Image 1 (cartoon, one colour):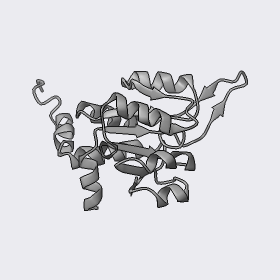
Image 2: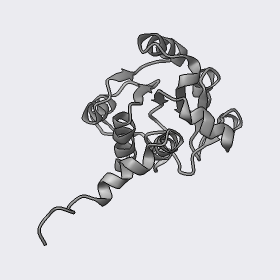
Image 3: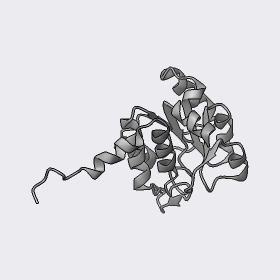
Length: 181
């Protein structure tokens, strides 16, 4: 586990896949072709806290969806790459744009299409219910499944490794302390 903490301490960007990572992988389609996805609110808050700690968030997904665009905009995430059949192209673009090395980047995936990028990064993460091959090639596996808290798991791991988690959580314990009884 010490190796994982050391890797997490170096992270300046976390890239998430969407389907199977930020969602449980289910695709809900309406009669008119509308697409619906369910995101876990704690994952979103974990991503917001991580950004407050100075770590960038990126999205690279093979599918294109207005739902993803809306959700990421609501979280203030600007590095969103959709419709990426070869995720390495978006990865290299993002790495160059942010002037980062591979060691400063984490990638969270769930399926074999994520392996090419996972092999490049400093911290490759598989969600708990990922494909067996993805788990085999990950440095770390989240305790929770995709869409069920996995994103929060990696956000808190990184904040803990960088010595920022306690301070981030402490602010919620002091809310209301100055309010009259």
